[in-house]
Length: 312
Image (cartoon, rainbow, N blue to C red; front, side, top):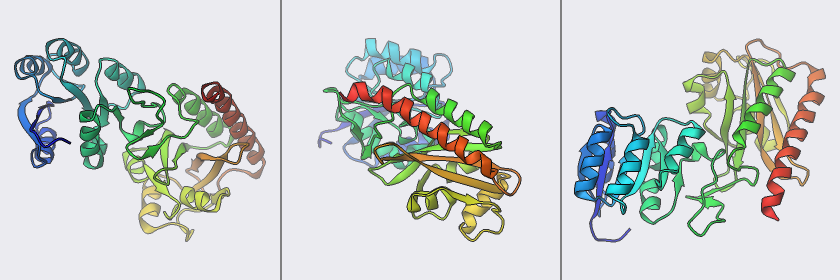
C-alpha cells in the first residue's frame, strides 16, 4: 500500500464486529478510519459527504440493505472501492453483491485471517472473494484470465455455476451409499489443503473444524489425501487414526463411521475428496463402492467437458 493516508468507512449494524474491524484496521498505517455507520441509509449519506477511498459494507443492514446501499454509493461516491463483509454465503447473494461494482466479498467468519489480505487486494484494484467461496466463484483481474487470487490456485474444475453440479453429485453419492451426512472437498493446490464446497447434514462445529484439511491432519479425508487411497473407518470411537479433537467433533456430530474417496480425473489430477458419514458404525456396504466410483467418474467427466472449451 502507498504511504499516504487511505480513508476507510466501516458499515455494520453489529457493534462488536464493527469494533473488531476498526481495531484491526486503525493500527495499520496508512489506513485511517474516517467514519462508521450502522444502517444503509446512513452509509449512503456519509459516503457521499466523505468520499472515502474504501468502504467495508455489510449486506444485512436496517433501513437500506447493503446491496441497495452499494448501488447508490456507486452514484454518489463513484471512486470509493467497496468490500462487502457479510456472513451470507449464498452464491446468488455474493454474485448480486459483486454486480454492484464492489471489488470484493469477505465472509465474516473468515475475517480473522482474510481481512487484511482482502483490504490490500481491493485497494490495489484487484477483486477478492473469501477462500471458503472459491468453489463457486472464479475471481479475475481487470485484465481477465487470472486463475490465482491471494495465494489460492484455482482448481480448473472450479468455475462459476458449478456449485449446482457439486451439490447434485453429493446428493447422488449420499443416496447411493445410504449415508446420513456427506461432504465434497476440492483441492487448493497453492495451500495444499482440501476445502469443503458442499455438505449435507452437518452443524457449525463440524464445518468450522473441517473447513480446511491438510494431508497431515489426523482424520479420514486427510489420511485419504496423504495416501491417495479410499480410507474407511468403521468405528470412529475406537479407531486410532483420529486426533482426540477430530474424534470429539465427529462424535458430537453423531458420526460413528465414515469413508473418504479421492476424486482423481482421467489425467491423474487430484481434484478433491468425497466423504460420506454414518450415524451407525460399519460404514457403507461393500456392494456400494462400484456405484460410488461410477458416480464420481461421471461427475468428473461432466465437469471436464464444461471446462475444456474455456481452456481451448
